[in-house]
Length: 273
Image (tube, rainbow, N blue to C red; front, side, top):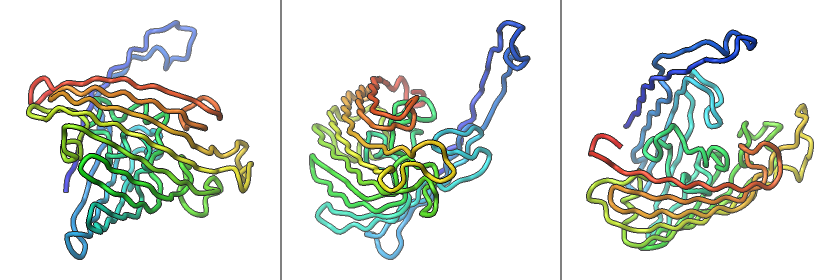
């Protein structure tokens, strides 16, 4: 069992012309419990059957947690290891797509609460089933899910009109998979290496009904491809990502969009990143 509890101090300067709303000129500050993750994991019947369940709380709504102020189930997976590198899983899963799909949350990935690139171009989490294989230098996972980026993943939601298929493959040199199993950031003593990733997704949300009942806009049909590269140099990590995606949830309008993310991080001392 693990729990992450970040407390943030937020200061907002409200300087502005007095002609605007009074709220626009208010200067506000204070502490807030931003996002809390609580995870439970273990074995079911034998060591080859594992489960992970995660609940989250946030004081502010965002794309991933739309209802603030409440605990919500954000990840729940049952996995069966089949041997020889093969495994199958089912539940509320990360859609295998971009670099962040390898992780349950972003707490050990970026300085912020989540990656802005993934916020705009990510495929999120959906109920589904997946199969994957992992070897010494290559691994891949693919599966079938509810419609990508549907805000209501239930089977009876009017916005969930179709299904999605998605997959992701990675190649690495110089490191073991365990080094990047739970974190993207580097640490002292880490081996240097390179990791390349490719993701593809197709979610047909318009084939059955281009105008969902009671909603004026067509349901996004997120699909596309993404490429990413990680260069690991001990405590320093360099990351480059590219996405070409149709109907990305963070885009200003429906259509094909592309995005690039470049970031670098380094561990200064063991307790401060």
